[in-house]
Amino acid sequence: MKISATIITFNEEPNIKAACESVAWADEIVVVDSESTDRTREIAEACGARVIVNPWPGFGAQKQFAVDQAQHDWIFSLDADERVSDDLRKAIELLKQRPETEMPDGFLVPRRTFYQQRWIRGGGWYPDRQLRLFNRTRGSWKQRHIHESVAMNNGARVGELGGDLLHYTSPNAAHHHRVIGERYAPLAAQQMYEEGRRTSILSAAVAGPAAFIRSFVLKGGFRDGFAGFTIASFAAHHAFLKHLMLWEKQATDQTDKH
Image (cartoon, rainbow, N blue to C red; front, side, top):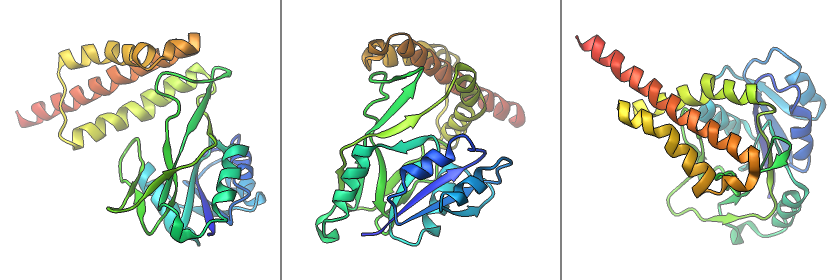
């Protein structure tokens, strides 16, 4: 069982070295870079990665492009702000000793997020299982604008691995606010629009409070103190903003029709 680790990047100079080092156990590291203007590519190459430049086609498409460039069928997909923990590495190394005929076709990995100088337990952020190790002959990345994930073929078996994937997300509030406004909310609104979903003024008005309650209360965000409150507040902001952007798209449609 040989594994290709794939990482997609754009201006990840602060992150790429640690990301590559955390998958040094892989049989190859493939970095697909969407035309970074910093030293991302040079650092990745110095870490032994094979670097390929591909103009940005979207999250799902870029991750699938990386999969397609790999030499081996078994893929471990890593984001640049993620790290493979020692426990997860050991679990994968044990896995490589097993006959492939006895293994599932993909594996879910628990992801633990570091936010406001602490590891988050609630708010739906843990264990946040992600399908990151898989046989590409039995699965592929969904082509979605946001919340991209691996879809396994019918009949494929999926197991679980112990050990956490460590996620070092937004380093500060300004960054968190910016990625919601510039990336997540617009992409979510576009995805909803293309799927035929529509919103209303009432739906937009209640989306924020509902998201806050779901994150802070129902999913236990209160256990993380002020960090949990912050996460719930940003969840509310994201929920309202994506509905507002969807509502604006609908209004534009109505204007165009008239």
